[in-house]
Amino acid sequence: MFWFLAIATGVMLIFMALTFPETLRAITGDGSKPPQKWNRTPFSILGRAVPKTGTDELGQPNPNTHRRSPSPLQIFRVFTQPDVLMVLVCTGVIYSLFYSVTTTTAPLFMSVYPYLTQSTVGLCFIAYGVGGAIGTVVMGKILDYDWRKMEQRYAQLEAESPVADSRLENGTADAHISGETFKRKVDKQDLPIEHTRLKRVPIVFFIEIGASIGYGWSIQAKAHMAVPLILQFIVGLMSMSIMTINQTILVDMYPSQGSSITASNNFVRCLLGAGTISIQDFIINAINPGWTPRVQNGNPTISSQRAWR
Image (cartoon, rainbow, N blue to C red; front, side, top):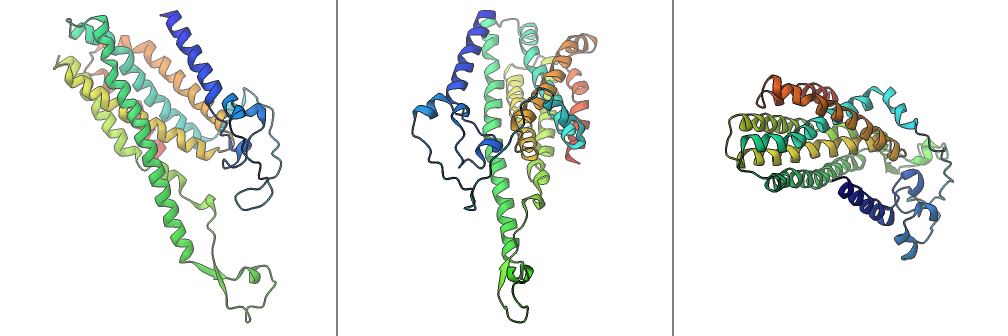
């Protein structure tokens, strides 16, 4: 198992190093600004060169971006922001629930369904993995749709909110002479980013809670194996959907620090996930698989609702 994981990790690391492009806004802007060669992948260097326009989306020259030297302590600075910390904790507890179901699948299934072998138990993880993959893709599409709708709504507000000519604001024209108007430009800081990104969380969260509780009781009642597998699929689907939402809003809040905020998110969720896994066997033995999800869902319920508020 060790060598399998080591080889698989090495292959994925090489694949990412060769193909994953640089997307940090501080380096690439909105994507039209090509990064320096040391920030480009080998495939992009050997491929077709991207012309350097030297201008941003408004046609203005791109200012030189002076970035600080990377520091490992940068990931801890975001913990001083209460709103960011709440999103990180919410992601962490959802991730701990996600891992709890994953790590208990093999022992619980083999004890409840004794006819299963190691190979067939391994196949049971397919439902969970497929649900997580679909959740990531589908929720990404939904987030893009919500964002476009929000931009269209505010663009319509721009069109319906004429103000005095810009020359009047600059003092270069007389108010009695100019009869022109122009449309007010809505600042991106005024856009309801939090509401747009998080409005799907309550319904997704409660579906996940219901599915995880049902999963625990289906194992406890020794229901047909299709029942917990379907519920696992739903838990994976909803868990990855919530984690996708939270990761997206974190990057929206820190667009120029995508790597730092992602590292902070990984640190919190892996820490909480490790803590949950270390005690879940004691919880299962103390009560039973049916009540365990109810105990574990207490923290996600509180943290998710606080993040929404």
